[in-house]
Image (cartoon, rainbow, N blue to C red; front, side, top):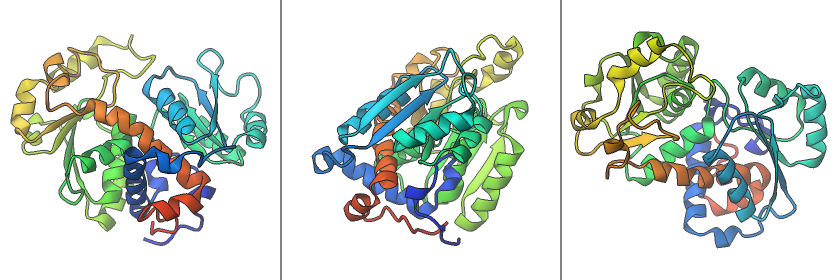
Amino acid sequence: MSAPTHPLLARDLLTVTDLSSTEILGLFGLASRLKADYGSFAGSLAQRSLVLLFEKPSLRTRVTFELGFQKLGGAVCFLDHQGTPIGERETVEDYAGNLSRWADAIAIRCRSHTLLEQFSRAARVPIINALSDLHHPCQALADLFTLVEAGIPLEQLHLAWVGDGNNVCNSLIEAVATLGARMTIVTPEQFRPAESILRRAQARALRSGARIVCTSDCARVDGVHAIYTDVWFSMGEESKAQSKRDALAPYQVDAALMRRAGSQAKFMHCLPARRGEEVTTEVLDSPASIVLDQAENRMHLQNAILLTMLRPDLSALTSDAVALGGAH
């Protein structure tokens, strides 16, 4: 893979594929250092500002960005766009141009990935995708960091996704493809991830050695390190046809499916969960569940991203390698 022309400082993070494998591993290293001792990084983002633009409700994403940035000494401005979509009051270009004069970075949680790309083209400061309809890179990176932290080597990792092939699934596919791990995606045929996502991931997998398989057979979870699921309906889609719920019902993660995976298997979910729908309460609250570890690690991983973007001098000194010039 060829080296990127710019460090992460000068780039946006809209999808996992904006990062190289070396950069992702560097972010994991920095996130681990942050988690162990924030004192060493106190004030590292003093006089820096982060703006959050959110069109969708949030608990984990908002709190982890706000408290995380404040832990590093920075200031956060939250702008709620649930009632006024981005681009409605003034053009995206005008909005991005103004915020670029005041903020050092902008994290956007929006309904449309196309809007995110439009905002990125118009802004002059780094843009972070805090969730779009197609991708959720911060979540996927924190998830794989959580599995590494649990002692699972990436070169051995086998992750199973069960349920609806949504935005989190897309970003996990890209992360696995970049890092050379293995992923089995278990969905009904009509709810598998988009072919465009799978094609791009397979191209990366050819270089990294990753293995990505789509199937509708739940028996394919045998022996995996973790089973991951998510809600069957994204925010705002809860009223969709009962037919989707009926199609996904056989893909609920219950105790029987976890037993099929094996005693080593962890359970993962990005939350919030609809207990009794995509996952049973028994599994969600079981010792195998690492959902709260995932939630906690969102803050540390996102802080690693922000430090790498805004203080490459500091991050390069404190991680074995935040690899700003790493290979793509």
